[in-house]
Image 1 (tube, one colour):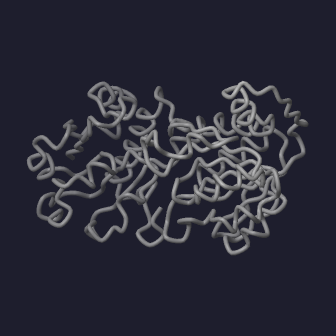
Image 2 (cartoon, helix red, strand yellow; image 1 turned 90 degrees about the vertical axis):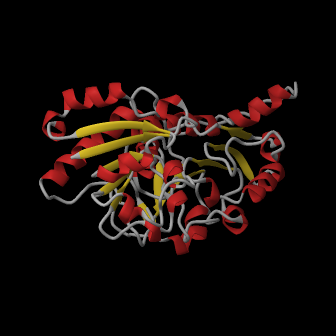
Image 3 (cartoon, helix red, strand yellow; image 1 turned 135 degrees about the vertical axis):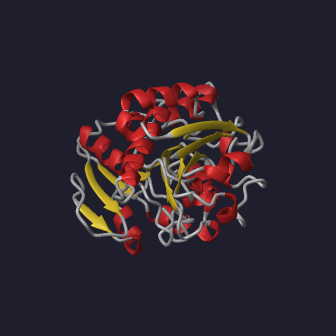
Length: 333
């Protein structure tokens, strides 16, 4: 079995696939890798040769979107390909999957962020409760104000999206003693969540939440889900965290409602454009902390966890079992 790993060197170093990772994976997962021939490439050098014999391709969505990647002719370019594993959790950049042959499965990195995301969300919820974005804003402007705050325990948290990232938010909320409700397509219960609302009842669910965590993937249904009307339906003074996808949120409405005081404070880990240009009005927004998309990524474990997921699926593929972390072509996550 030929597994080809391909880097785009424009990505930050913590997301690079390396020979060291390959050797560590062979040592940790001998059953999955004994019959595997690994190759490692970068920036589409030797692309045709590597794809011609690859059973599995491991790469980023940026590689799949590169103009030189043979989307239209993938069956001919990679006749042996069984699955593509994206090192990203979000897959909206490669949608729709009309370019992916029916015989090829797409898997993603869903799940590798949970431990770091939980810590980030505990930090962020405490920061919002302490009105830290407001304090930081006052410091920047040499303004002495005293925004007092009460303890966080017993306050309410609404988690929008209850997948891996959403469950990290639930775990963070439980650790802080919050009452937790959620928004998801399925009504199936989630441990720690008192009540689950469908997306159609977002305005009802949001009205009593002291804190709102946006953790949903980006799909046609969730794009601009957190629009002006939804934000206006929120409780006055509510704090908002976005650790999901930028385009779920109306940033112009966020700016205006923060300035008006309808929303209290916000922390956003995903931006409408990355890197966020210096001209963006988000930089000058009061009561807003901008995190440069690092909240859920642990540079020490991200890629080793990626290889763990890959090796588990290599075992499943060899045994003829269904793969894990399969991206649904219809649901788009």
